[in-house]
Length: 154
Figure (cartoon, rainbow, N blue to C red):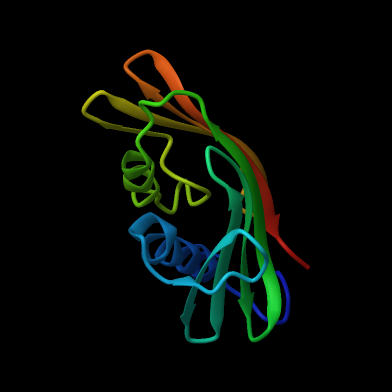
């Protein structure tokens, strides 16, 4: 499937997205100078690909990530989330995000558990056009939620 003149392999794009996710926010790395007031910006480059993630806010936040190849935008995802309980663990969220795979390359895996925390991610669609909800529970109490949507660009 050819998405544009810039990409002939969707698997290549997904692999880069997973790698960039692990090497930026989820790993506390590659934060760059903010491109707009009060934003947090992360950037990762490899070969012809550039990944950029930017978000604003804290306990309630909104952001976008994008991937370009040779200066052409190929993928974008928007997200909006909030912390619902003081017992939320940002470290656990980052741990869950680092466990995304090619089956679930959007945010994190369908289910991830560590200790008393459980991460759940439900997605409708595929990498070309998707929407989803991720939630974190401490035992049975929901402590975090984030909605997201995105896909490939033409």
